[in-house]
Length: 136
Image (cartoon, rainbow, N blue to C red):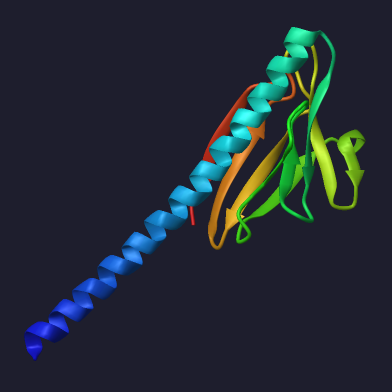
């Protein structure tokens, strides 16, 4: 009986750790997809020689890159956006705009899942896009 009890405890600990790893992987993948969409938008602004914006809908946790379809985050994730006032298109929507010289309106987007938060920072001067995990 003691061996079975120890095995049950060990399996419980392993499954909790695996669950947290899986959660982290989901947030990381969604964040990397969003970073790719931002970099695509910046590239389109440079190539086309006119400003382009990645637009986020915070109500349904989705975003749209120029010329692409809407991409929705998994249902248990949430988006938060901090951007320039001029890029706020509604109470629950806004975007980050990139200009032909590579610069942007700047801001940051947070992808949240439970206690996990991944923050995507966009520098206004250079348009550089960086992904950072905030500690729990």
